[in-house]
Length: 476
Image (spheres, rainbow, N blue to C red):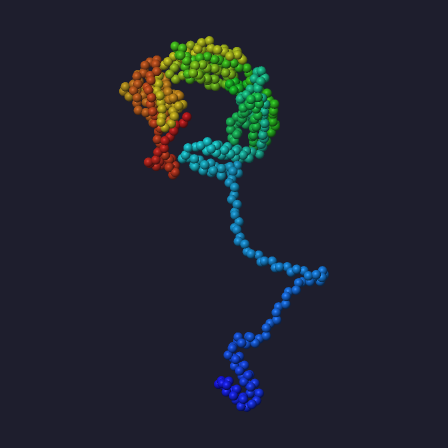
């Protein structure tokens, strides 16, 4: 129960004492404290002392204040970037194994299969093929424990001592094994991994150098080498023989070509008209059985020369001697008689008489193809009589502009057809041949042959897929 303050004051006055007044003050203070609650209680709490300012640190040794060091800021975490994995550099062909290189070649060939090859494509294939050949040689050579490399060098000169440019030097050799009989030899040129005869071509000064590598499964005692020069005109020089130890080189060799002469002349028709494209051959009139003498001019086929627009020819590189000459040309036959010339090297010899050729029965036709050129391709003409029986066939190479001359044509033929590798056989074309003359049949356009295209799964045994064809071009 709460007393009214006015009643308490009145009561105090009636009593007339100071104790009553004190009682009222105390009671009123308690009442106010209870009404104010916690906030009033906090106001009555004494205030806390103010913080003392931080004094500078005094170094007792230096007896002077040192500035306080500020705290270093805490390191901030940085975002970590993932490390990039370096890409491996592509392997070069020289770094690949033989099997890997083979797969690369197959891949390159597959990519180039369905498009026209550029010069860059061809160069790429050449480089890969050369690298493959190099690796094959290295692998094969590694099988032989006894290996050597020999360098053979020297100069090719003519009869006057001057260097001969663009001459060819051929190297052959045989080996004698340790402890083997004299017949126990092996020709180096037959090596399975070198292939062919080592050779070199002289420079403008006539110098040459041949580096020859070889390996054997047995120990070698000595190597017998043989060098033979051949001039740019196919004139053969004398052989030079010498022996070397395995791995030993030979330098400063001197190979001499003999003095040679040449034969010049013309090939004409019976009425004196020059014949273009006739092939003239000179053959040494050597005594019977003297193969060495005839071989000195390089063999009959190597003396073939073709007449120019004026019907002229020149056969070079001939040794002293008497030569028999002959000429061939489609649609013409060499007139009966002997054509000969005598060479006194190093002088040229002109023919006393021209080589005369007479016209024979022949078919002349101009052959073209819209899809591929025909120049230089070998085609055949088949002749038939009036009953459709086959009489004969004649082959010839297509000339410049498609003009082709088929000789030995039968005069009784009434029609013919043209055929050749890569081309469809033509229809039969009527003709009227006259003995001793050339019948001009005009022109004919050939069509490329179409062959089934092999699919990806076609192995050549089953029938190829239908509905797909590819045009096959005949080879040169």
